[in-house]
Image (cartoon, rainbow, N blue to C red; front, side, top):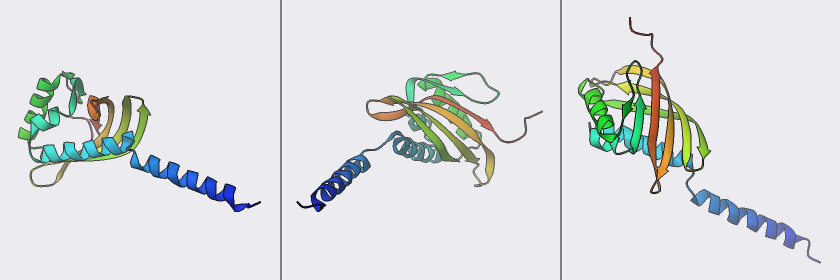
Length: 150
């Protein structure tokens, strides 16, 4: 009896299973790709593209402000932020926890002004929802690491 057959069969199964898993994109990969798209839209000062990345009933929870609800209000918020001098953002995902069609992301951010200097750094927590195969921001909450304003 050939003792190699079960070993070779097991190895082939593991390789094929691994290739299948590698071909699928998990929530972290999808969210990190969406974050790249978000940063690119912000760099272009395209508030409409940023707002389109949120669900229809999306909400922002900006620090020291009321909740911003719905895509139109989200677009106005980001347009005002861009007009106030925000020109770029760097997002770093530190944790993603999949919850089926929803996912929670924890990360940190750095916001840059028109001269390229960092104007704020902080952390964020986002609840993402899968809509028509794409990850959309549903609840977006962040706060600065800097000292509170007086």
